[in-house]
Length: 201
Image (cartoon, rainbow, N blue to C red; front, side, top):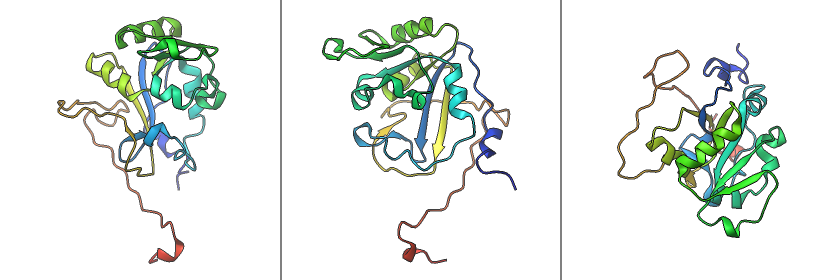
C-alpha cells in the first residue's frame, strides 16, 4: 500500500526556481485560506509530502503579502516555520503607520508594480504571493504564473477565501501535472466524528 504521506508526490512535481509568480496557499476543502480575522489555528494536524516546506523555501526568492495578513502575523521570520529568509514585501495603502520590521518593505503602489519589485529582489527565484486580494488582482492582469494549492482535509465554513470575486467571469485553469490539462481533481474524504459516541461504525 502507498504511504499516504507521499501519495501527493504523484499529483504535483517538485517546484522549481524559475522566476515565477506563485499564488501559494494551503486551503481548506471549501476554499478558505484563513479563518475569520486571518486566523490560522486550523492549520494543525495535517501531514504534507516530505520535503515540501524545504522545497518551497529553497525556490522562493521573495514574498509579497497584504497588510491585513501582516497585521495578523507580523513576523517575517516565521515564513515556512523559519526555514526561509529573504525580502518580504507588504502592499498597503498606509505604509506610514506600519511599524518597521527587519527584512520587510512596505509598498504603496499598484499590485503590478509591487510584483515587479519583488521579482527584481527575488534574484531569479520565485515570488510567492501570500494574499488572496493581491493574487486576484495579479490574476486579472495575467501576472500569476502558477497557483499552488495544498488542500487540507477540513471544512472551515467561514473566513478568507482564496478567490472572492462576486459577479466576475469564471477563470479557466489548466493542470500542470501531466494528467490532463482540463482534468478534474478527485478527492475522497470521510467526516471524522468529533464525539466518538456519535460514530455509527
